[in-house]
Amino acid sequence: MRVLVVEDERRLAAALQRGLGAEGFTVDVAHDGTQGLWLAAEHDYDAIVLDIMLPGLNGYRVCARLRAAGCESGILMLTAKDGEYDEAEALDTGADDFLAKPFSYVVLVARLRALIRRTGRRRPQTMTFGDLVVDPAAQRCTRGQAEVRLTSREFAVLEYLARRAGEVVPKREILENVWDAAYDGDLNVVEVHVSALRRKIDAPFGRAAVETVRGAGYRLAADGG
Image (cartoon, rainbow, N blue to C red; front, side, top):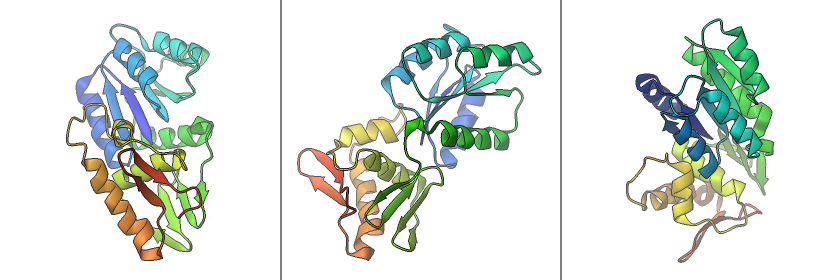
């Protein structure tokens, strides 16, 4: 699941990026409203954590513009403490939920997961390909009756391929959508994670769900291989 954090307090933004990353989210960060609006338009996010007081464009304007552009990502807006007017305006401009600062990190994660389940980006919560089942909300993968344990990044790669099942997905596209926007490392990191996926979801079960299309990318077989 991919999340955008738009927060100008850099220490808070960095802490959220680290913490949510450890929870299995892929996290991009913007420190002003203009950058946040651009990232939200360029990438497909399951949820956006959006502060109100931002340089450039404030959170209300970012939220309103995203909704006007047809953005369906769940938006959790961060409001001032006891800011009932902030909360009302957040909802009026298109936010799905709000959280007052200072907030509990545990509550933030729980609210984010609930928001993603609720809005679901209009996508099915569980995806089934033969005996392979991918459940993004629970971060769970099963093959037949067996649970397959994946790292958060492996699961993110599998989820992205599952969203595009039957299609050839270029390596660069996987990198751009599963790793955060600031990643500038080796493109071969995708190959490493796809190989790990094959060892876990295919090899032990005599299946070949993840296919390599030479020179083009990878494809998850719609029937589970």
